[in-house]
Image 1: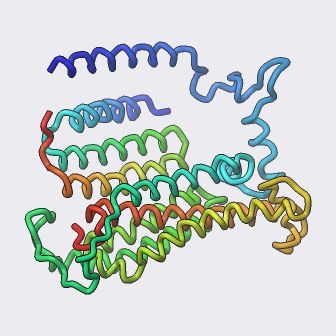
Image 2: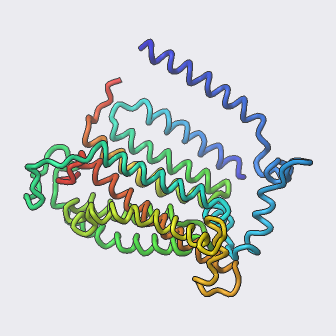
Image 3: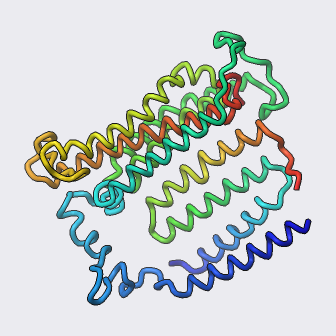
Length: 81
Length: 265
């Protein structure tokens, strides 16, 4: 494990999670959620779990972001809480 | 506001408990941890068995695929069933068929609901049309090469589905549905599961256990049972890929059109 790389990814991971939860524009939240998935993918790859990283890159960062965006565009774009 | 405070307190407490539980975990890559070294006088070491015997048992270099598709075949089969169930649920909740929906009706005019309000996206559309077959070829490579390198049915299936989603996003959903219709993807979703379960059932024909692929050496005309297991893994990966591809596209088609399969983003 490369500790500095780990720490950088983890810091950005927490930041992305907080931003995705707090931002009012749900389309932006969906994009940040995609970044979150991609950071987790990097973390898996760095730990040597390449199969899991591949799944996370395709499902977490790819298709699920598109599905969330499709849902947001069909509902309301602004979060009310 | 009050509910938010209570929710954050609950989240902090749960997180603290989880972090406390993590202390008991073995270290990352610890060779002395129970899965790696076994329990003295108890369970044997599972990881060690897979690392030492996978290549001997099935001639598959990628241990992860061998564990997923062969040793733990039941898990993967029912994971695929879970995907299918998710697709069926989205269909059951969202899909609406209205009598006034005419499939030959012209595309609705671009509304403010679309991303940029422009339905003629020529540059994006043509770029994605060129990219889609390349994505599909890479996805087929990922499926076919899943037991030699990272990848497999699930990842390849998602990529195949994503290529259709890309076409629907950049061009029009109607054109994509003309190539991969609702009838096609609904059938293919079940065909994938049936390929998996069928390959599992075939060994029972000759009196072996469910998913015991070694018995299929006659069917695949291989010398030993090892290569039969390897080929069967490829077979079940293809089944998984077909189901996942269909369900991913079905989810997108239903979610992006509120279940009407018309218009689209």
